[in-house]
Image (cartoon, rainbow, N blue to C red):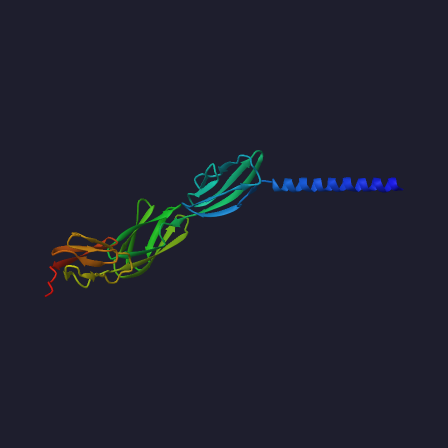
Length: 258
């Protein structure tokens, strides 16, 4: 009887060890199964994302079903080129993993602020422009240039307009245009040496670039504060987009205090 109990104990111990070994082995196999980080990607044309393969130390070979739609580097970096669909394949030995890539065309700008008579170029990345129109032609005019690759927008007067671009497949894209008409209330300022004065342009929300023709006479900082330095005269320039303004600064000698 004792021998039977001893035999059963040994049998149970062996069974437990084998069960643990089998369980460990199967979990190791599952953990080692290669897996792709993404199986579907939607990319705007001109942008990139990187795919990764986990669960393997083996070399991964990458390929694209259509390099014209989406390319892939040796390290799995996927770049959207033209609108369409492509399959990115990761090959590990004899095993293959795949990711479906959808590339969307996009406008180079979707929102822009212009000054009157300023022009910009709008490109459609990943597709060709078939038509372009403006909701307010008196505010912003449009035209196609460079064989459908770009559209030109010209700000005509203060206001807002929606620019609609249609590609060769009929898909529509929009860009909101705001046109401003900056102006200056004063053009001639007299200061004494050491005095400061804030110059301003009205009716603009854009960044203004300030500069001085002669900083020895008067200098200006990035927000339009002018400081008179020495007797004389100079111009301070303000530029918004493609439009420039000038302020004449006359600096007088500092009055002596009695």
